[in-house]
Length: 453
Ligand code: ASP
Ligand code: MG
Image (cartoon, rainbow, N blue to C red; front, side, top):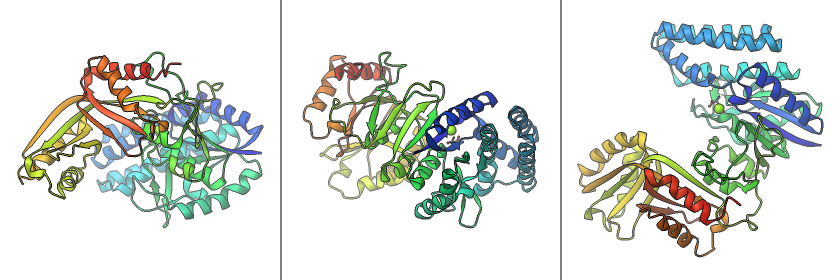
C-alpha cells in the first residue's frame, strides 16, 4: 500500500465545512493508501495571532480583547459542529493565559511569540482530528526537533527524521488517522518553536521523507503550477509535471508561495510532491519530481515579479578592485535587504541589483551610508516600479538560441530590456523591464514558446 502525506493549507481548513470536506478527501484517499495529515492554522489565524502577541506586549487591551474573542468564537463554532468543544475550550484558555502573561510582562521575545503563534496549528489539528475520528499530534510529539532560532527555527534533520519514523510509522501501519500540526515543533529542550511562515509545507516534506512516503500532496486553493499567471495570460495552462529544480526556480517568483526549504527533504529523498486543490479534487494537480523535461520545450513557465526597484551602483573606482561586490552585497545584507537579482558586466563599472519596491528606501540608505560616503561607488541610479520577467525551464540548459528567442520576442513588442541575468545552472533567463511593459513581455514569451498548447 502506498503512503501519502496530505497537507492542507489555511484556506482548505478555514471553517468547519471546509474541514469536514478535507476529512472526506483524506478518508477517500485512505481507502487505497496510508495517509498522514498535516494542517496549517485556519486561514488568517496566524496573522491574527501575531497581531495579538504584539498588541498584548504593547499593552493594547482593546485590540487584544477583540482578537481573542474573534479567535475564540471562530474556533468554538467549528468545535461545536465537529464535536470537540471539550478539547478546544482548554486550548483557548491556555492561549488566554499565555497572552495575559505577555501583557503582564509587557514584552515579547521571539520565543514567546512562537508559543502564541503555535496555537493556530494546535487548534486546527484538533478540529481536523475530530472530523476524522483520528488523533491530533504536535510537531514536537511526532519528533521534529529544531534549533532555537525562534520564528525561523531550522529542524535538526537527521534526528527529526529518525524520531518521526519511530513515532509515526507504527501508528500509520495500524491505520490510525494522525493529524500533525504544521509549522510548529520544539527545540531539544522542549521549547515550542516555529519553522518560518508557510512552514506547514516543510513539516509535510519532513514527514514524507521520514516515512519514505510515495507522494506528498500539498493541498491548497490552487489547481497546481501554471505556465503563467492566468490573470496575465488567459490561455495559461496547468503544468502536469515539472522537476524539483524547475519548481525551486519558480518558487522564487511566488508561483505558489511554498516555504523556501520545503522541497529539500523531498528532493533529497526522491519523493514526489503533488500540488493540488481541495476545491477541485478531480484535478490531479502538478507533480514535482525528478522527471526529465526532455519531451517538453525548453521553457516551461513564464513568471513575473512586479513592484521591484533596480539599483545600479556605478563608478570607475570599482573597476578591477577585488572585494567591491562583497562590499555592495554586505552593505545591503547588513541593512536586511533581500536581493532578488544581480548583474554586472565585464567592464566592472557598475553592479545592478533588483530589490522589492518595499525595501527600496532601506536599500538606498544602505548604499548612501556604506558605499557613496565611503567613496567605494560614485553614483547610484535607481529605477522604481520595474518588473522582473523570467523564463524558466531546465531543458534550456545546453540548448543554444533560447536567449535569442526570448529577447527577440520581447523586442518584437518594442519593449526595452534594462538588465539581464542568467545563472550558470541555465534554469532561467531573467530580465528587467519597466512595470507597464511587464505583462506584455510575459504574454510575448508565452506565445513565442507556445506554452498555451
Ligand atoms: N500557519 C503558518 C503560516 O501561515 C504556516 C503555514 O500555513 O504553512 O505561515
Ligand atoms: Mg499558510
